[in-house]
Image (tube, rainbow, N blue to C red):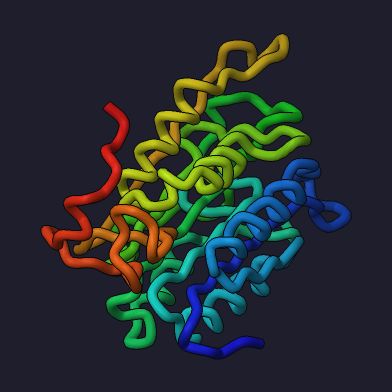
Length: 266
């Protein structure tokens, strides 16, 4: 494993196939999401590790370990699975409570580092079961609000709002595929993080519409939770116009570099 301090890190946990006997359907687009995330983030200088079809305990153990590893400026985590409000499910069908995962990163190692979580999973059963929806109901444990466990300098971007389903297609999820597509465009890479997430929400909400007899016309609206105390530029490229050379992921609000950023969506 690479323990260098000189790189930003991304960890992608993708559950596409569940264990025999688990009553959760296969997620055929998850592999495509993971591959595109790896390709896109690697080009932006992130060390990307992909973990597929882990059990609940394995996911907990992975993030506990990752929360203790050094990072240069930014740690990015992606969790993609079936889910309910407050949790995603491991390959064994057991819940992984997001509040526990977030809480791991409230430590000295991750202090003053930018932390971004992308959650591709349903947060409820508003949409009925369907081949394109990552939805499951009847979680056995009541959800503890993850908001209280999110550390300072952390942002969490959910694929959907509380109580709603998140769409999955064999070609990938609209949420993660759109995220990667935006990062492939130079102007978006240099945006401050919350502005980039606003652009992601706009793209998903206004360009996506589900098809099919049962889901026709259904929409998806990502939801951002942030406890950032500074403006963050985790994907910015040093040396580009409007980007200060050597700019790190964390930048104090009001600096000259911030004022020169490309305007956000109007």
